[in-house]
Image 1 (cartoon, rainbow, N blue to C red):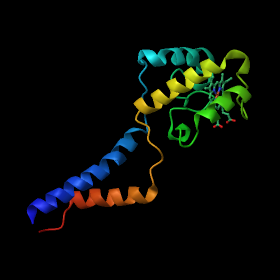
Image 2: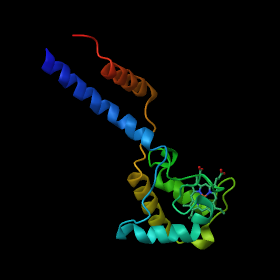
Image 3: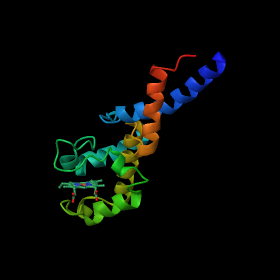
Image 4: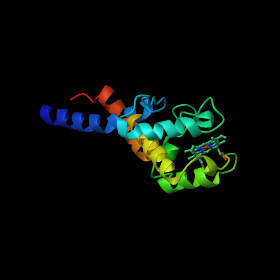
Length: 146
Ligand code: HEC
C-alpha cells in the first residue's frame, strides 16, 4: 500500500501550500518596478495617495491603512468602493475629488489590484480549512507506522 500513501501525501502537500503562502503574505512586498501598463496608476498613486498610504500602499508606518491587504481585495472591497472612498472620502480620509479625474482613479485602482496580486495576497482563508491543513502537516511530520 506504499504508493497510495505517497499519493495521499502529495494531495495533502498541495492543500498545505496555500497556507504557507498565506503566512508569507503577512509581510508582503509589492514590486516597485511595475509593468508598463500599471505605471500611470503608480504615478498617480504616488502623487495623490502615497503621502498618507505609503509609497507602495503598504501603510503600516503611515497614518492611513495599508491597501495591499486581504481586507481590500476585490471580494472584500470592490473597485466601486475604492472609487467612492477617493471621491467622497471616509471617516478620517478627506475627499480627493479635486485632485483626480475619474480616469486617473481607474488607473490607480488597476495599479492597486496589480500590487495586491504581485504581493501574493489571498482572500481571508477559511478557518476550518486552516485547522484541517495544520492537522495534515502534523500527520505528514509523524505518520502512523505502517
Ligand atoms: C490626507 C491623507 C490621505 C490621502 C491623500 C489618501 N488617503 Fe485614503 N485613507 C486615509 C485615511 C486616514 C484612511 C482611514 C479612514 C478611516 O479609517 O476612516 C484612508 C482610507 C482609505 C481606504 C479604505 C477605506 C475604508 O473604508 O476602509 C481606501 C480604499 C483609500 N483610503 C484609498 C485611497 C486612495 C486610492 C487614495 C489616492 C487617490 C487615497 N486613499 C488618498 C488618508 C488618506
